[in-house]
Length: 352
Image (cartoon, rainbow, N blue to C red; front, side):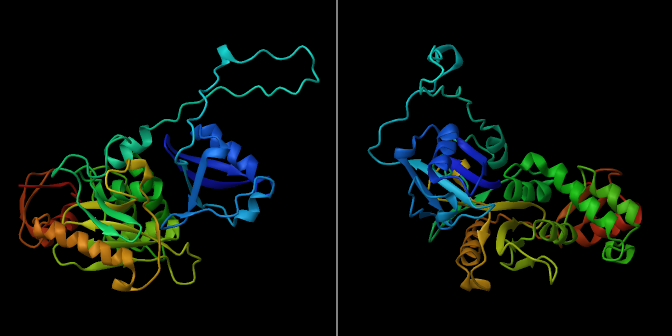
């Protein structure tokens, strides 16, 4: 059995697929969560999403070329009738008296939960990506849809929330990201020494587990290694893209996620198939297909940053005014904030 991610009109599900079973078995699994019958299923995979070819019910799933971790997208074919209503326990047909009779007793419908995706993308699944004229998130077109600025809460966990959104599709898992960072530091004293961390290791670990502490390059490096996936973070003010890659020699996924940094705040960038698409149809992990601007997603990320820069959606960290939320001391810029944190261990700051 191997996990295959399925995006469907009701949300997102992870199927456990036996690649030796038939394609029809897979279609029945898809039907059980999407309520789209096999004959009406329009299946796509990859990025940009492309139609899945060779869908022959009697062949094994392996004939489709899928591998563990792939993503499928299912929609209902144009002109296809709607799926039959779910059969609930109270309305199931009675079992036949003849035990040899060939009657299938369908399972009760289990409604898909949208809560995780509502939390992850900051809107209900039915809300459009650019819902509300003029007040929706910024976006730019790409070859496969639109690159959308996905805003996370403006708190001291924005980096962890953004990372949880792109890797876990659920920003509420920010504490999980903090924990994996703390565990990585705790388990590798050679790489994450006191010299690298700039403070005692135990102090750094306890601080990073606090929901009020910020994260930065160290945390992004650890996350990239954990997920074996590159992180590209663009600075809105300068347009500079910083790449955080898994360590040399480590097997990687060949994929990348995209973050947006305003100077004091991290957000995510995700791919929507069309303007106004439900949030649960957005993709947050894309393949690396080139270096720098030769990669269409990096080129799109830079265009998105240009739009944000034109709106002054950034903060100059060298000159902005901060206040230590612990002792109340006023500070000028990131340099003074870092110095204050090093001297006092205080890591919770707010902007005046």
